[in-house]
Length: 184
Image (cartoon, rainbow, N blue to C red):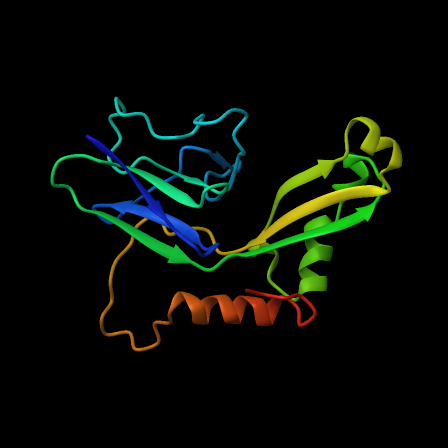
């Protein structure tokens, strides 16, 4: 068993597949339908790093701080890593409670504002100031991802001439999101 750490300089989503089947990251928090997930942040260093005694081939975790994808490799089973476009947006809102923020039309309103389908929007984090900074705080910071969910199974279709690179996918995503956001 080897835990391989691979540096990625771009902020795309990294989907790991073993035998063409998706292996979710160890910090995945699944939705009620088990069809999509958001990523939980670690509460301590190494919390989600794959353990060498794990029985899951391809178990993985992307450490955003160091931009390293950690993957367990066992035996001769091939592991594939596919990049998928994702747009990260962070913005500040006036002071409000979490209940007020998660009002009845939050995702719908964001989708209309950003000009993207509701199914692509994930609220990944809400940051409120603490301590002395909280007393001076004028609002909250919201972090949003715009992306498609990963495919459960991966297959290559060489007859499809419309395949695009990750850069082209990112550009389409940025363009459809909003012209006034800077995309890199």
